[in-house]
Length: 281
Image (cartoon, rainbow, N blue to C red; front, side):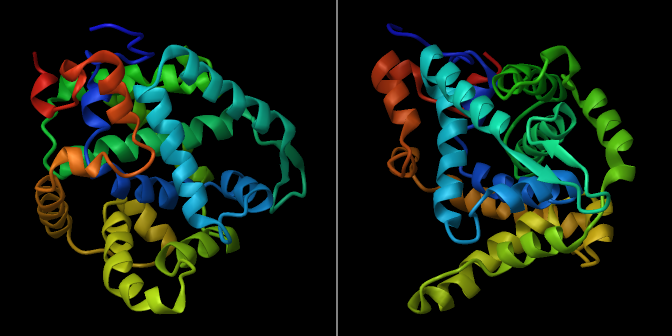
């Protein structure tokens, strides 16, 4: 292959996994999970216009993940530097104590990172994407790279399933559902839509949001106070959804913005095409 393979390279688990369509549902799960940290969600509420520009925020997040996964090393480093620069300028007020704190607080960055990466891995595996335990650990270790890009010290970031589980056990007492988390929950269930699109929102989007919510850990359901189907039912729905979405030809799916995969294949050659079977080679 010619060209710069980027920070992850086509030999990584991340390169193959992030081309899967279930990443979109995993991203919504991550938003539900991230909102459980009062300081993290307060930082979003004070510094984001996500309620007015939901699609734009979603696409910016997808673009960052796509750039860091499939872009050149320079593009990924530049995207990370931009995020660090923006975070360094922003602050928020603790909803309980009134204390001001920086958005680039390492504890907050670590929570956002872990909630995101855990959601990607959880939804992919539970929906049928073939990853062994060792490959799942490798995926988490690879994302110490993305953690560095947003300003974290890689050694402080969980790099396998055991350390990730330990992290969530440690942070669990800090999680709560307040007014901000309720606002996120309501927004994810009923995002703003043109009047003509409201029926489609009710039929399609709510099913996606409900599935993402159902895939959360039990403690998250307890905090939100809204029950979820039995785990076996959720797993069946995730697998059915994954099977359906994976029937859509990858080349067609990858035509949707931001098209990072197609650009990576054009840069590196056809062998850079992401595919699950390449992980074990």
